[in-house]
Length: 315
Image 1 (tube, rainbow, N blue to C red):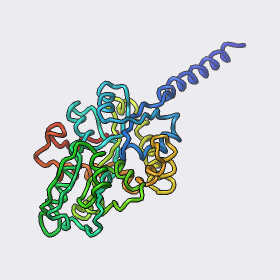
Image 2 (image 1 turned 90 degrees about the horizontal axis):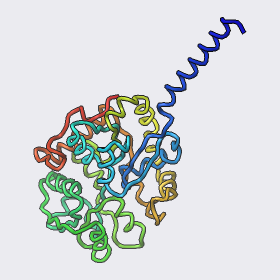
Image 3 (image 1 turned 30 degrees about the vertical axis):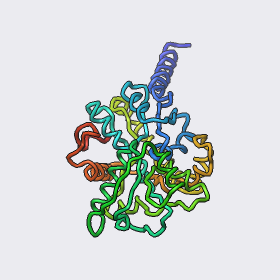
Image 4 (image 1 turned 90 degrees about the vertical axis):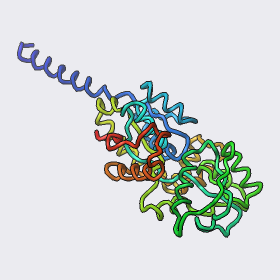
């Protein structure tokens, strides 16, 4: 073999090796934690179809996800927007929002089907868990800004969502606000208790905007080193959320995901989750509007301030 051929072969192998080395950077699936609630359930399709790209773990608590993001053991996560903002503030901007995943989370339940509007709650008791500060702010905003003026209702704090659900089934003549996940248990039973006011619709009618509940976040360092992964995730997440938003396909996928012991509950909660995909300027507007309405000047719960556009990953 002459020298010219040897040089050509050497160059070919060098180029192949270089491309392999570059491509190898993304061969390992990205670590992805998702909360077991509407912020994360919409990514079940992504988990099943894109396991080569994402190693998705569903977590029981937001604290577990927050710690993993802070110590760098996960790259992406799906969790409520208020927690994402708190993490952004606590890490000096190292955790950023990629997209919104859900615009619904709570149901108002009662046996009294005469309650059809926020104004009908005047003088009523509204039970909500003290473990749901976001739900408390959400309901307070709706009551304070209802059509026709402020609605005076008594908010009663229960110890847990389980207690609120039990009261709705055993008593039921008052009103009970619980996350979609907890309401699923009620809706799966033959009971007089049911959804009386569509809270998602009430919010949108009152504010003219959507309620930013769930989102996907990324570690800023990871995003800057892997911009192509952010582009891919946006595409994959949108496909997953659109699929999961359909009652038939989404309900079946969620019931077969292994995340629910009761498959009927999984199928019943899909409408209330309001899975959606929002990114870019629309996400900025949606999140900013939601936070401003809920927290205003009282933003200590989310780390001290409502962030600007730096909250969002622009890679």
